[in-house]
Length: 153
Image 1: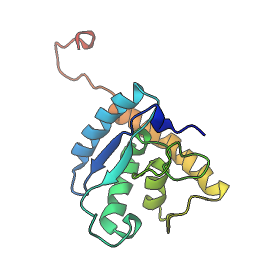
Image 2: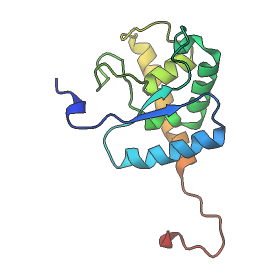
Image 3: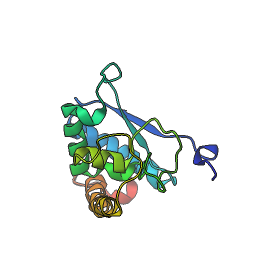
Image 4: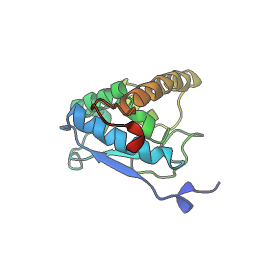
């Protein structure tokens, strides 16, 4: 299997649990534009927990962050998965993809498993499609200033 990293540079976005909704939306909008121009999404890391012995799925602040990312459609700018067997395009990836964020936000991740039942993956796919719409809605350019012709931007 060809490693996509031979062709593409790994794109990582690092966030912290103290970012506001507005800051996260701004990051998502910036990433969405970049994803549209390439064939790879980003992988996500959470800064500030390197010295914490718990896994991210055991940290309440990270779970809350991931739920917030789900609600705004942020997972749609991420790689589909960084660990899911048969889906991940990146070997030994240090970050999280959409599936990992979804599984932590929904209490599905309880270990470093790479194999999930088909029903779980199907549930994720439905939620990813819904996330894509939320991302599109949140990233749509809104022209609210009078006397500004959008074609001039």
